[in-house]
Length: 77
Image (spheres, one colour):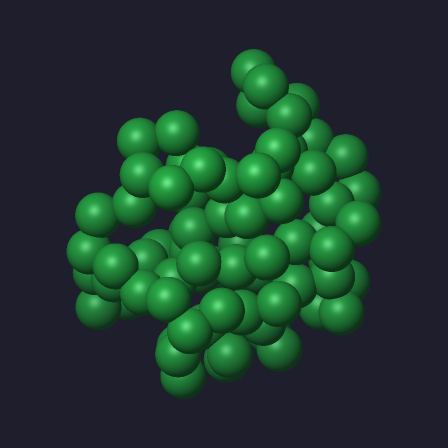
């Protein structure tokens, strides 16, 4: 499954699962470059997909690095 030009990230939860999150107006480019506002909770759309093993090319973010509103949605998914 492709990650569509840096539009998706996987967020690591405390229970070991990873949740897929869509980013609006934020992009992760090649070699770790990124652009956009990461502190705005309206830029995140939490998808109902969770997995134990994310794709090798995925950008993985810890749950503590997200805004509080988004973190609650990720934990509920």
